[in-house]
Length: 173
Ligand code: FES
Ligand code: FES
Image (cartoon, protein in one colour):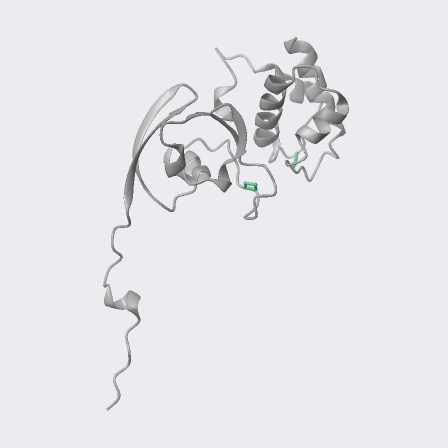
């Protein structure tokens, strides 16, 4: 009688706990300490563990920029990093921009200049623009377009996004 080989996975029985790592991160000024699996992507840590769901996931190819956050002062696509890489980091997400119930000038400018339609790309677009204006407070239109080149919008045609960033830059100077 032939014996069917069990797959190595079945031999292990119930799923074993994966490697856990302890991380400390500061997000929007608040400190968090968590034990996470090594394979957890930073974007999923932000959304599913911290429940900061303003950071979106729009692709699985690192192309769309919907997951953009500011990480230690630089705009990054949070789907391209593991959460363990954020140990000790300072992170800013869209939830941290409004202060004391007042919209950040970028949020206000996007609202006033119709810089969004469905809004799916908007948190990532605004975080990218937030970093861009910190680096270059007076960008030309061309510099704005280059600055947001890694963020895709499927609705607006970009005209009003560029207009919004220009308006916010003027307001913030
Ligand atoms: Fe699309 Fe990160 S989810 S680039
Ligand atoms: Fe819909 Fe940009 S507003 S994807």
